[in-house]
Image 1 (cartoon, rainbow, N blue to C red):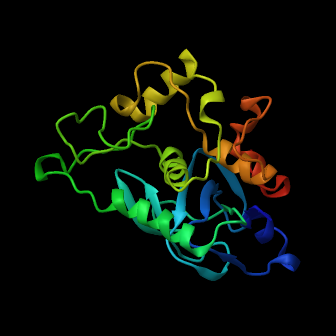
Image 2: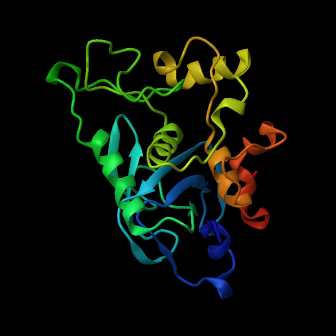
Length: 237
């Protein structure tokens, strides 16, 4: 199964078998715990994506998972309920990836993880909501070790570098004026000023869901909402 929905497994206790995570799998955090004693969820405004850093044989929702992801920079963190507001809710896997390709994916992630800015720029975020830049952040032209990714463009870039194209980037629609305004309200100066092709995490999720690569749906708008993967009876709207 290319897409594993751990929220659905958790919501069905009789089918809650542990599932493996493989190095290089694409993982997503899409939900927020609703307040109260019962485990129910609401959709996050922005989903988060990353790469599994090492195999985990028996993952269950809430167990820690070692993940490379684009935060302020490319970081390596344990994702689970109480750390960084993240955990692995969904996981996507390409069945044909062998161990050598998985190792190359992590090598690519490490290229960015090992980059460190000069001391004077250490406080700045390299997150970039715009066309991805693998060698120079648009706002840091003098920082030759910088880069600019969103969480989803970082994942997609690593896969593309090992010859696996998850989404048809050229077919994606440009952001609208309203979408740019909403992004600037959240990401401020780390948002591209002109329209760009935004790689929603939902597009990556959709590729694994349909097992179709590169992903090129008839209607891109249908795949922007990652809340569709939260079981309806567990969703707080």
